[in-house]
Image 1 (cartoon, rainbow, N blue to C red):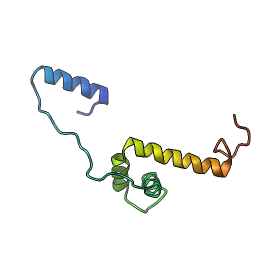
Image 2 (spheres, rainbow, N blue to C red):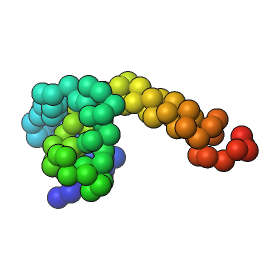
Image 3 (cartoon, helix red, strand yellow):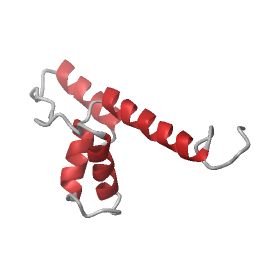
Image 4 (cartoon, helix red, strand yellow):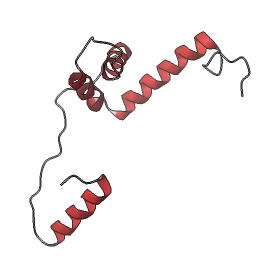
Length: 97
């Protein structure tokens, strides 16, 4: 049966307290994710169906394997480029609020 994350955790805790079930290992992809902003954007656009540079499963795997810190770096790089192109708000609106 499929459950949401909180229900799954609750069920797992109940089973563990009752001594039922077995421990499993969390899936951690072997790859280290996107190494550059270009790879990140290729994966995101492929996942969204806006590029055919890679398959959707490969794009999802790369995105999931990219550590949160690197994702934040990519987001900052994207916003730096938007600000350089469109101004302080990054949207092309000249009013900063």
